[in-house]
Length: 322
Image (spheres, rainbow, N blue to C red):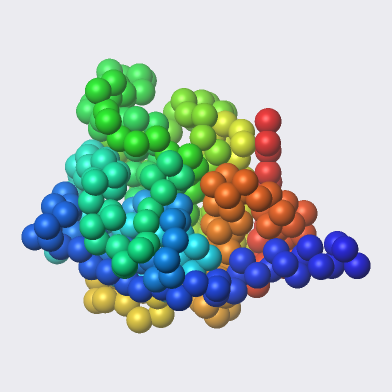
């Protein structure tokens, strides 16, 4: 009976949390002077909440993730999602630079744009990203500058960075390029197990269909540069979840802008309801954040111990603590 109660409690992370949330658009003209336009999803109830910095995918505007980000925020988190570009993309080094600038802005600017009596706890700051944004998140956590390096050498680290310390990292179907020999700078994947030089806990959530082509279109998350390699190069503690029957863009909103609709249209998708994918990805993220920002391991241990409590099939589930 106790086990059943624990599983039932853990399954709550897959449902909308107890906090009402609001979406806030912060433009660069705002008095807080953000380095780029931001989408912030925050609880409205008075309190101090951990902060998650979320990096969107390639040509997928941050507004296409509002359902997923609202799920996370409803469990007591402030999610800050920068806008990296408009109609044309920028390089990943430029994305990393912008993400670092936003992280630095948090300590002075975040309080100025949040609802009344709502504060962000920058001492409990986590980092995440989807697709190419997942690589950006990993690169930022690794302290990369994005500068080119000598052949077969990892990029130099920014020793003068003032970016606040991240306490956890979550990659949502991260992608590092179109194939291993075509990785773009910074080439953070080294194909050496547990080589990432960072000590924070890592969670990687992959899609089962991301490595599969759709008609004449190539995979959006190809083997060798996708979630499995990001996990393989992460040091413990590290978690790995695979959404077996879903695709690379199935965690996005149902209603997308034109560009995101095109990207999802050329990506292989699962046949199940996307709402279940969003709940599962959001729930896994919440359970991981609760463990490493909130100090409560119950939800994460329950999901790892019995993945069937998730709304979709999670296979495999790996959790290495040491």
